[in-house]
Length: 384
Image (cartoon, rainbow, N blue to C red; front, side, top):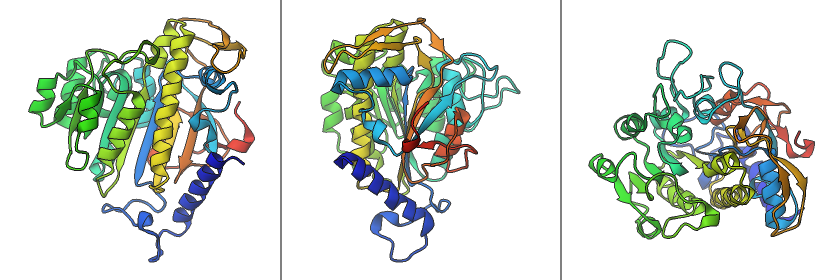
């Protein structure tokens, strides 16, 4: 067993011991209950990574390019894994809004809807972020797209249309108020974020210069619109892995713990263009961001990490592995989304070793320390 897998399994075993023996007075420092008591075994910190458009083939292709072998991305060492069905409320191919809403609220909705009961009475649906915030935890949203993109929006806003960027921005600043908002700029504006009490940074240097401990509200306004592709160069803007580390270092100061969503949002855009080079570049950087969180969690073992996708994009299939540093040969079936299942990986406290295939609504249950009914399979069982 390699060193990284040993560390992963050891961390998970220790985390499981917290579930069995939560009340021991001799528990180590990291096992102390939070200020707001959670159910026995519940994670103090919950980190959800969503690779937008990232299906099984996208993960496989990125591993081939990075190391010459599939199965080698950071999250593929996680001890539990499985697959997720992604259909929307109508059982049709989902968009990011409906898929993210399912994961954020546990309720399926129609395409384009941001955490509202549509179909239904149109009432706002409580999100995981809002529930964690109500329990006393800090919260954060990080993405490589505009920060009001459908995926982060589903966790921090309620709008009948994903295209209502101004309304989503208002929901962030006036209602859900995530402590950390890092992504492409424009909505909300820097001026609006500052007026709402956020410290605003606009580039990589500004993000890295932040004094992490005293910061309570931070808005990263990185350019205007979606952030550049990794393979095109980011100029003075931060990588997703750097935004992830900054968010962790800010949020970890809350003694109650935190919830953090990190989206690799431009995997989807590259796959819509059937651009394998950009898709792989975005997926590899997404893997680096997960690796940052895994390293951070080594000293924060009361943490749950979940890595998944909202849907697959492009209908991509691998034709041949051309070795490390060479793009694999692939075939594309579409420039849109597909109904293909997507992967899910979990590490840490509350990760479930029960075999089965999840619905996207089960991600919400996993985040909230509730039974999924089917669970996710042990890594020894393989991936469908």
